[in-house]
Amino acid sequence: MELHNLTITQAHEKLKNKEISAVELTRAVLARISAVEPQIQAFLTVTADEALAAAQAADEAIAQGRISPLTGIPLAIKDVICTQGIRTTCGSRILENFIPPYDATVIQRFKAQQAVMVGKLNMDEFAMGSTTEHSAYQITRNPWNTHCIPGGSSGGSAAAVAAGMGLATLGSDTGGSIRQPASHCGVVGLKPTYGRVSRFGLVAFASSLDQIGPLAKTTADCAMVLQAIAGHDPADSTSAPEAVPDYLAALNQGVKGLRIGIPKAYFDTNGLDPQVAKAVLAAIDTLKGLGAQTVEVALPHTQYGVAAYYVIAPSEACSNLARYDGVKYGLRDNTATQLLEMYHNTRSQGFGPEVQRRILLGTYALSAGYYDAYYRKASQVRTLIMADFKKAFEQCDLIASPVTPTPATPIGAHADDPLAMYLSDIYTLSANLAGIPGISVPCGFSQEGLPIGLQLMGPHFQEGRLLAAAHAFEQATAFHTQGPNL
Image 1 (tube, rainbow, N blue to C red):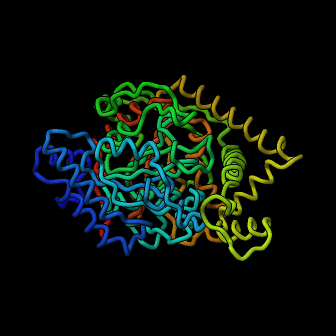
Image 2: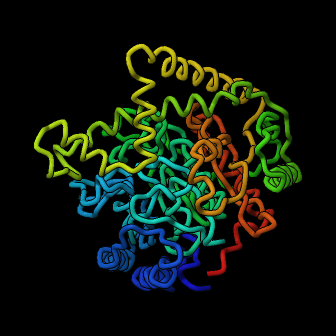
């Protein structure tokens, strides 16, 4: 097997046994990036020199008998996570030359294990989008079919893993931005419980919804990355002081006796592609064959989820993005002679159309006279959705559903219809509103050969249960072993 195709689990064993070196592994991944990146456009920054230096340091640590699960493992990072001394753009012109003076907590934890960062990954601008067409720099393409989207907003993260340009990546998930591209690119993507992973150093989109999580080739690899980044962080006031279990040990718990909830509302949606429904239902049958039981559960307020999300998220976004005004850092328009003109010109030039649309939506929803009608009402709906999940989890251990209504669509399909793009988040955003964990695992292919994902959602802080179920499904199927032909 070529080194760039190794899983983290396989690479860790080879590094530990000194069958390969971290430098060899990193060079193989950098060579793969050089070979296929022109087709995929997943990276905004490739940090080859820094990666090789980190790999050399990892080899020295291994030689001294010091090795952690991620030591010497080449990883790539969504460009919404701060990296000290390395450009962090959020896919936006307004941060085109921003170089953070500090590392996000998740980066600090990677460095503590001597992981190797090979670069920063493309994304929808400020994580606002479901296609990675809304980057200010380039459109990332799906490795399975380069005429199709990879999903978003962590499209670069999913495409890089699928194309072998990193053994795993980090993404962020505000309404499905890890799980949806994972489904479209045929990789595993996990959104942890809100508060499980520190958001310190994650550039904010919607602060009550954002969560960092891993994308990888296998569930076991996701478990290894989550183990490294999970845990309380005093630097993040929303970080939960919950003990972190041993996720690798939880992998082999299986699904025997597990009650899997099937939300009828998720399968009765008009926009659900029959191919997606067929693959997901077949995956549920596989889990039943492994000893799980199924029970129908009601999530009656699902139908209001998209509307509530697209009030709450833009409202928080317009507040968070107010700081980009050309004064302290980032882009500044130098042609203006008046302060308000400088604000206007800077933000008009720096933000793309989708970000501007959401800022306007949020500003309207929070404006005097409309706050109660929109933001307060959406927050009340959010409470009802949380109650729906709480009640459902009294009847079941996990909930299974599609990740997206369709396989990956052609690039440009939603260019003139943002509402269609928003509706593609219908199965994922409820987990963000409720703060619960969710995972996407490959479960099939469309007639056109595009990947389809199964979504599993669990109660708060039950990532181990999700990983165990996804791992059991992987062991019984071969979907995760297949890769695109590049």
